[in-house]
Amino acid sequence: MAGKQIVWDKTSERLYRTGVDRVVLFPTDVSTGNYNFGVGWNGVTKVSESPDGGDTTQVYANNGIYLNLVAKENFKGSISAYTYPKEWEMCDGSAPIYAKTASESETFTALKGVRVTGQQRCPFGLAYRTLIGNDTKGTDYGYEIHLVYNATAGVSSLDYQTVNDSPEALELSWDFSTLPVDVPGAKPSAHLVISSIECPADKLKSIETILYGTDSAEPRLPLPGEIITLLGGIGG
Image (cartoon, rainbow, N blue to C red):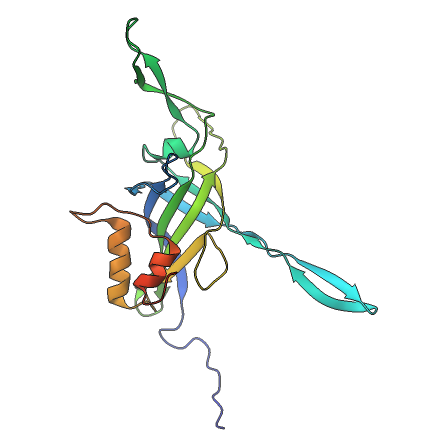
């Protein structure tokens, strides 16, 4: 059989990844457990992926290493942004205060302009896009769409500083952890990645239409089973 010599750094194969954009937040409806319609998240500067787990434990027998046991992997990360949509407040543990508006009234109404922190944190889903570039087309080469499920934000800290002759906008940051969901044909996971380089254009367009919405349809987060069906597989 004829061989094929490896060639490094061929033209158009020098790939790199960069950037983050088209971030969409999908808060969970606590009464139903389903994802609400998506809202665009402006001002995002960074989405960091920092999964943990996957550690190996060596098991010994017969005076040697018998096997390696691999722990489950957990998808975690963080979001950094200059601002956030109103819907994020429920995910960050903020909530309105409800009070009676008149002494004779038994109706409780949310007080405008005030929120209380330290409340129950609403789980959420997230979609964001990262770019793939190469040496001939730059960042027009392609992109990846990331879908995150069952995420919960952790407690964040804020540092307010006096305005001076070198003002800086406050960058907010939140860590998040996830619980995996069922993925037909694979182990449960909380993170799907869809590549524009390999995914057929018409199927990718269908997924993006669902994620970003249209003039007549609200944006929503499809579960892994639906993604698999849209890509031509059997989603369970």
